[in-house]
Length: 89
Image (tube, rainbow, N blue to C red; front, side, top):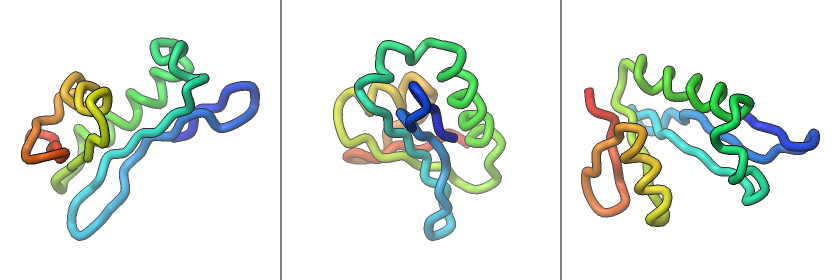
């Protein structure tokens, strides 16, 4: 899912299949940060989380910084080792 701001891509979230797993990912520009609770941002985020919840194969995610780790934990991902998190099945 892509979120635009002023007609330009400002955030992306989704799932990528890799070696029998789904990898959850998100990335957004600083300019989108103040709008993270806006419905135009929440709706696509909730859509992606729906995909995660309905996944029939394991879903993992990697936190590259402390803020990312907090985000994953808030969503319900469980810390497995080092920077890796898994969606509970």
